[in-house]
Image (cartoon, rainbow, N blue to C red):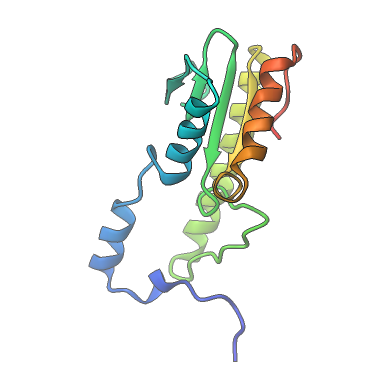
Length: 152
């Protein structure tokens, strides 16, 4: 008997699975909306959403004048080490390669932004949902420091 976690999406018919995956949003997710509400509540203004930065993707939240950007990484898509979410069994090699490419892109983006003088912060979606005040403190630290921070 296998003890591996079972993903419910594995047992759905292809059409249902396809529809389910198509409904996953890349912006305005509940962790992002929660963080933005907290930022407004604490007086953080002047940020842009999903601003396309030259050669460095689109951070979820960007303060251009302060050169601070925040990425909210989904635990499934970016493979959060704390969550240990199972890799789908169907087409496993595709998913493993997809997740590897996502992580490589994240690291490359962090390097490009840091080299350009940006302060970069990556937050896991579960961090925002479980302890939003800690996330707010980390963002506040970026505003008060003068040095460029690597991703946390």
